Length: 271
Length: 216
Image (cartoon, rainbow over all chains, first blue to last red; front, side, top):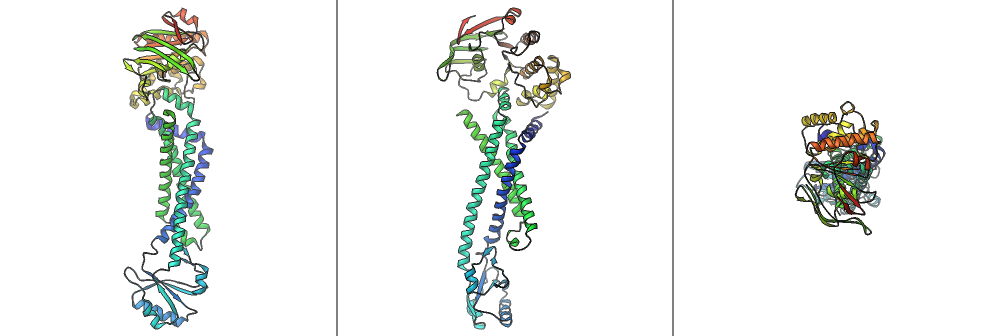
């Protein structure tokens, strides 16, 4: 028997004794982290939108195939790639994860998203010289940008609130664990155990809950993606960075919760 | 070894558990703290291992003032404590119960094994080392508690009514064991209200009543 073996054994016995409470916390944490992961993915997919030299070419009325071909050629000559062509018929109403307002689609039946790469822009005069139907060319549409900004701000605040919520719930679970094992902890104190010796199994419990929540969120995310193959799956499709960040965040919330509950417990006892 | 200077302990809302107690227990002594229930025996014991703080006065253990210490963990590692209700960890084996104070003290794995085996042989429970506390009789559980209390070679062994839950035969066995430990040089302070024990195993007696030392 050594300390590590004792701590792991104690931690496992705590988990066994409080299985229901721990599992409930993991499920709540899992759902909260899933929302975080979706938010994170959306933010990630939209973050670079204003910085890229993408131009939005808004076209008045219907455009013929010949006109579109001509315009494509001009862009190609200038080494500008067409990233996406958006029309109401195609129902592609998302640009880098941001929804285009219905009103905008009514006024502007066609939008060409052109990617010029760093330092390159689509110049309206040049295009308008050939196609008179072009109403305007903008390096990013301000309305969309403003909306996207608002959505992003809301999502960031919402995510922070959710993470705060997970931490509070985990702290509450660990505090309950303290109460549930009070008798055992008191015996250990009488035997001369310091707070580190007593707290390690509870610290492990917090990390277990956090890691479990993170992993569960990733599993939920993958299942969601599998069940929801089409639109807007592109927007929220989880990548490794998002999955890794979600798991790491789960572990971090577990560590923070354990630390805070142990510190507050010590404060209660000495205060 | 243990010194009390004008120690008073008042529990809210103003109940005196100890009143101006001054006493001295020397190294290697075997001392009974006796008196009726509620006399203040357990409070006195608790003050020695800093289970509670005195309201007034000073307490010294091995020359160190323990009155104001915030963290009693180190002090408790040097004192063995035995309780009436044994206070064993129920979901741990007998072996683990005895090994835990050694783990807390940071003793190495190999040394823990040999020390625990020695202690369990000493209290006659080596064959039951993989049993759980609930599988043992009261007397056996108290022997485990004693083995655990002396695991770290304490200077002082405090026994608070260790025979309170045992029949006479088992009680005598336990006192024999405590006497044997005392013979090895450990200061033993035993709180009891059993007159049989006092007459069977004579030693210094400190009698407390209503929180005051009434005779020595």
